[in-house]
Figure: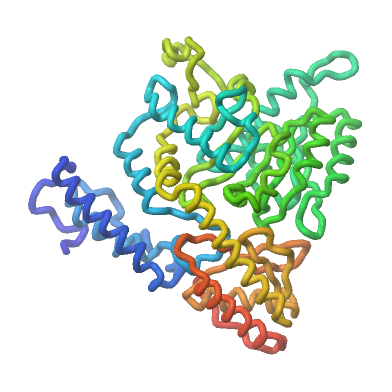
Length: 499
């Protein structure tokens, strides 16, 4: 293969339809080969910092390069720096599933290249999105107030972080419009306050910063032994802020916290929100997918009282990143908060009031056709296939949980409500860290950690499409054998790993 710095012998031109077909077939084959052989690779084997950049020329090429050379560099430059999130031994952080159907939907979206900021700029982009998100309301037994046929509706955001920001901006506008003090003075000059648990995702604090509320007016409410927000402390904080002259405006409840998958008591939180006219946002980023199964619909408890509710199909569902669904009970509140209509965006369809313009439901103006990959997945897997996926992963988690309970050297930090098993070594944090190092140094598996009530926790998140019960059992064997070996504090730490 020619080196990057040699002079080309011929001028290379951008792809045409025929060369695109050949390159596309080659890339599809490459992706399929990668996916089918991924289990033979170490899950995570990180190079030294800067090693990837060192393989790339300092300056962009003066002359175009052949696409065959560019595709070849997927193996030589890209692959050595890839952490394999689709690996069957991926148990870290959360699932980030990407199915063949979803990849094809993303490819179709890229091929069409539409800009779906307005209904009139691509009606299919808007109407398929609206319809598919209505499908999900029915499929997950969510409240009908989230259907587009009523006052509410759904919209695709990139992530739950953006969903939180959009909801918080709408909450801020609603509080500003209606809040008055005893003299009839509006919200101007009063500090708005947002509330969430101290186990909630960091995106809530970031959203508060971006919305102008500031981190000093984000109240992180302590949690109980299971990781759920303590409602009595939330109520006390709201009362305290009111007494100080602040303006409580927003509560984010978490259904499946990042650390230990704890479930906030949404129905009890909703009671406080109704009493104080607070916007209730529910973040069900990963665990929301469980609502496809009737037996796991505790994840939607209290949703009928929520102003907004979101989950990420790009986690546990087989839909590749990025894809977050945000539903609102009253879409007019989003439009009031986010709509800016310059002359160049005016058009007859918008003026008719008969269409949705999703530009008014998000932070950026532009938007791509995310709904295609979600549509492809729902149609190809069917609801039955999605339920089987969820049930299979939960069953694997419960089997691992039972094995941890039977191991004298390990303890469960919390009961596993769904697909995340959280454990610690009874000998303490150092032994837990050694166990994490052993697992991640093995090559077959990768786990992550959190700290919960001061304790280091080893997390096993089960949700990759390729994961089978055999993979989970093999991980359990490794965990238990090494946990028993490390009961003594004198057991040697594994060698330092670049992982």
